[in-house]
Image 1 (cartoon, rainbow, N blue to C red):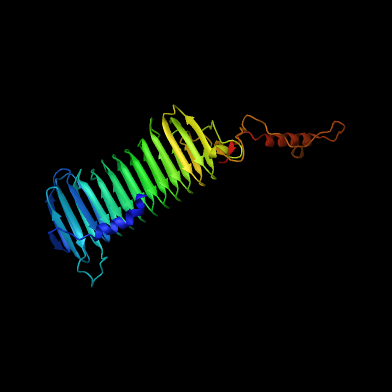
Image 2 (cartoon, helix red, strand yellow):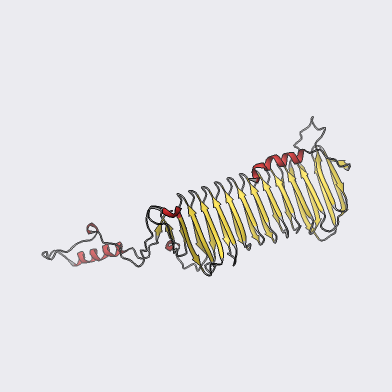
Length: 366
């Protein structure tokens, strides 16, 4: 998995000696011209990187560092800013640095931090952001966006391009993304809200996955977790083929299930059903976590009418069938007895009604 090499890559990249013959200073306040679709490359060990998009053709930089020197180099196609720690053995090499940078919209961004936070908004260009323990918050992109963290949270929103987000123990949250989306975590949660993408893959080992959004015609949606809960909320008007698979977990859906596992859990605990035109494909897999498929239909639709898949029993529909009335649960009237009273009749009728189970959900476990 790529995230397994993330920590080594970041530390190695930040430790590389600089070959630039630029300016060195503890504070930098400057503006330089950058060509259309140029690159801005920013890196630090600890501190904060903040980048904003604006409508000017220049890059505006306001930067400072507590320890070390700022190494700055600029050309019409590329701007580079780093913290030079060489020769700083007698001081704290992890002193905070702070970058506040404005870039022309469409600029390509390369952002790196060890324990610093990274924020980028409105740049509308390609973005690559990597951190070890800091947070990454990105919004307003219109091209490829790649975000990687070891323990800090990742947040991405309002993206018109593709998103790839990787985390180890932190969470991933994406909102209003319309391009292709890939999200991986080891123990963090993945939350995908209001997406318009038609190609989505989310995977985690022990975290939960939450998806709330549309299912586009012809789209592909793939969700996988080892022990976490996977919860999907989609419009009832969607058209998709669902394949839900779990080994020892449970499956619950608001949609009618047409095929379910046979008694004793045969077919590997796989549940399949189709809604609408079935032109999208939704695949959900978990080992011992729960799978919940919810509908955002009219609020009058009761949640307790959902189907639950149980591996130790064949599916039975209780709505249109009457449960066998147990002899020990209903008062019986013997023909040779005159002891039946009006109250006894009422009790008998009430007990029969309780045993019918009208409106109870179809019950399965996978």
